[in-house]
Image: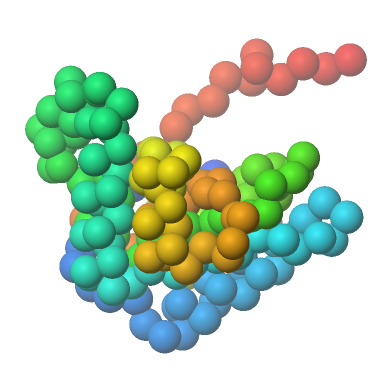
Length: 184
């Protein structure tokens, strides 16, 4: 296929192991532009992109996620994750947390933004995995300290996150079934 955008879409897969190589300032700048260029419903632009590269903050995030999972009584899941390396963010050097003011389209807008980041990363030779599990660390009264620690604006809620880095494993893109497309 001659279309670079479609080639990037077709080559992307969820990578769950990253090398310790940090992202460059230029790579971070491009990913920020990709996030900010994401369209939002009625151009509200009420989401915030928290770029986490600090090792201590990444460790704090991991700890908060596991504590929330244990708090909800899913010790079996925690054990399963520990067997898979014990990292929800997969040791990526960058995690982007997307939070937004509550609203009807907040999560849709965040989904669009996270895909922009994933495709921008892939187009630059980086890889990613989209993360839903961090939500538990930021929810409710228990998550207030984490929201403050990660600079969520007052009233903003976690929507989705993405780990980005240099792959340390290979994984082909998922196969798709054209029967999932309904034509009318």
